[in-house]
Length: 395
Figure 1 (tube, rainbow, N blue to C red):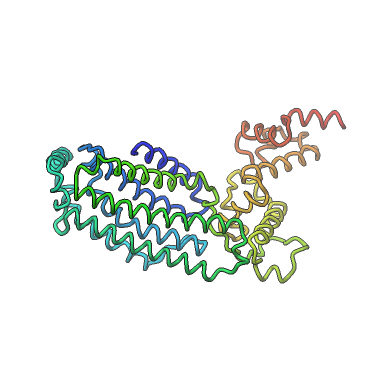
Figure 2: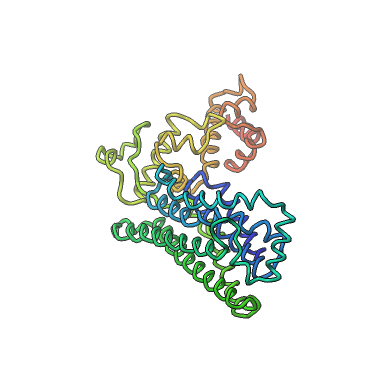
């Protein structure tokens, strides 16, 4: 179980690091699943396959994080439904239980050496019935802390479920026709169901293990453990299995008038965003072409997807979704195609009479020579030198 959970957890972290800028709400999902992963690993080394050194590291020190599991879920669902990254001053109230718990565990965290904690865990393991009665902080024993954590998580599950149900009840049938929304709403529903199952299985496992320590060695216990590992692993691999999660719900927003619009977009279209996601994303696609042709931002070596999103005055994940689903191209390929087009235009206009190939590729926005040659070969099926020779022979 630990190896499976840890490997899938690292996949989650890698996917988040490389994609979180597309939809910053993903950070709340990662923190939510991180908390559950640490909780699962602690339980495994404490009850299933006792390891005093691992338990000494994970036991009690992460209890403040466990109390944030519910708030992380609530923040994530709220952000996805609103289609924006939300953090308000009032959200600090959600951190109060975790802050209190952090203050309570500090004496244990810094008051004992690691070896003292290891020996303490060995003593508890020799008499496991005492574990839940142990006070790791001055106020609550381990059993009371577990109950508070589970109750808190259950409350936030109800809150986030209410947000989701309320959103579904207010959404029109037309809005739900969007494939992107359909996928995300299914994911949110699955996430809540899986978390309810995880919560229920943990309660069952803790209750049975407390009633009978030998329960951990029974076939029923292994079935529960495998079920938990499966659910946690699938949740961890969510971004990999369902890439659309990165883009969230796409709620159309009014596009800015910073660039000239295509002639087929009416004045009414400029004032009111389209109701269907596909119409909205198509309009973004048209605006991308207009901005790239008029402003030529790709000529800058530092041109990034965030710059284009800022020019269009739309969330970055809307732009990423448009590139993926409408234009069917990556941002890197998009900007490279415009840069290569600019390079070819300069060649045709005789720029080589005054500039070298390297000077031209820098002028067109390419930072490195290798990147330029690789991109040119990919888009044109030949090297820049071969292209120039071909043009010269034609002339």
